[in-house]
Amino acid sequence: MSGKDTKRKMASVCFYFQVHQPHRLRRYSVFDTEPNYFDDFKNRQICRKVVEKCYLPANRLMLDLVRHNDGRFRIAYSLTGVVLDQLENFAPEMIRSFQELAATGCVEFLAETYYHSLSFLYSRQEFAEQVRMHTARVRELFGQEPVVFRNTELVYNNDVAHFVAQLGFKAIIAEGADHILGYRSPAFVYNPPGCDDLSILLKNYRLSDDIAFRFSNQSWPEWPLTADKFARWVNQVNGNGYLVNLFMDYETLGEHQWADTGIFEFFRHLPAEILKHPDNNFMTPGEAAATYPPVGVFDAPHIISWADTERDLSAWLGNAMQSDALHELYRLEPDIEAAGDPHLSDDWRKLQTSDHFYYMCTKWFADGDVHKYFNPYESPYDSYINFMNVLDNIRGRLRMATGQAGRSILGRAG
Image 1 (cartoon, rainbow, N blue to C red):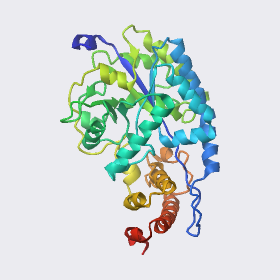
Image 2: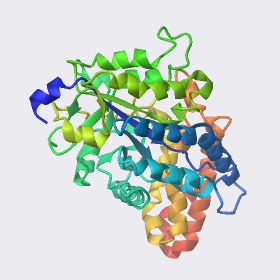
Image 3: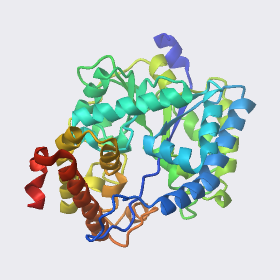
């Protein structure tokens, strides 16, 4: 598209939904010896609850909107490998539902780490392997080769961008952090420094959070949020950018914002309101990256994320418990690889899921309600103790699996 054409464009709305549920741990005491760490009953219960309240009605709505708007409504999903595994086991109808959406040609599936992990911070090898696993799973289930990457919790910096570019992706999703953008707008496409082959799509956190967090807040001055009001805000991008990137958890529909708040009706009417302006349209992230040329450099030398008010790593690495748990977990990587046991490897990788460390967070101030969401623990300290008990059992299994080769794991256990 030429520069003249992009200037004429009113606004391309880019919706992407994150779909994720972790394998929650069962209560695991120091006296436990069985290597069954995960609470299948609780995980199935929560999965079925979210499927019925959110995922299934939301998918039906999105499919209706695609069909009703003759393909002009387009969306994207990032489904973690761990949620895909649970949906296959506990709600196979959801896999079929996402496949039905994929078949419309109006839905894009993004790549991420299979286990929704923070592996980039600890092991580039593990990170690349999880991305490969996830890409293969998307290809297998939905017949798509992902071209856009979305790191866990939008954890991003220049190093992430350069590594992802080396893996062959064309675009990456990041938070539109004000302290990096300065006077600039998230309504444009950017490049990382020294990496012209990768486009960065930045979340418009103000408009995204208006839906995800403020929609049902009756003390919010803009409440109630209607589809026509939101469409007017989208139209204000005219002359100030090309894209309105609305990135949020899928649980926004029906779980974070219950059905009786009107969230489903809001989404039902939103495409028509946005499309009333003849120059507006919807694009998937891959389409947006292929359509709009980067206008400048988004230089992020330090890690940012989309979590909490700080938008940094403090949700997972803000205290000594979290740092210790993550460090001890990734210390086991060489021994996990040496053991060559697929069950051990899968358990170890399930422990990498970022939620386990989120539950250890001691920030109970502005973001307290968010940290309590589906949290199975009474305190962050309970979470840490439970996690470390499981990790100790993993160590014991590694000793048996590797024999003398397991000496490197004995440093902590004595």
